[in-house]
Image 1: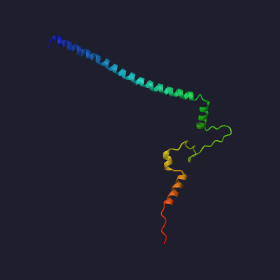
Image 2: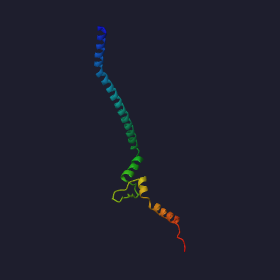
Image 3: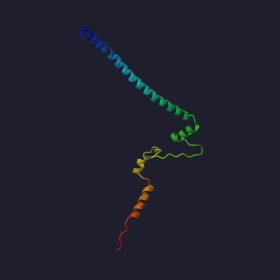
Image 4: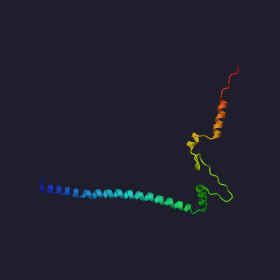
Length: 126
């Protein structure tokens, strides 16, 4: 190997060592920029959703419906009822399907008993 080739290899190695840190920083910053752009997109979607909700609250009919649903408001002349649970708290507005399967309605139990009695075998007469 000649002296010139050795000097060239050493120079290229020094340049490579000097460029490692800036290149690593550049890739790290690009990744951070991509992550921040994704956060901006999520935030923009959230802002758009909140603006739509804000526009809904301008409508007096929506406000009245939410007052009825959330605060149990009633119009003059109406009578409002709130169903209470076993613990004395207001019952949930909707019953889940799972709860309905665990505790079927009384008429389902009654109809099941009628069908069971209808399918029963009559005792033999002696």
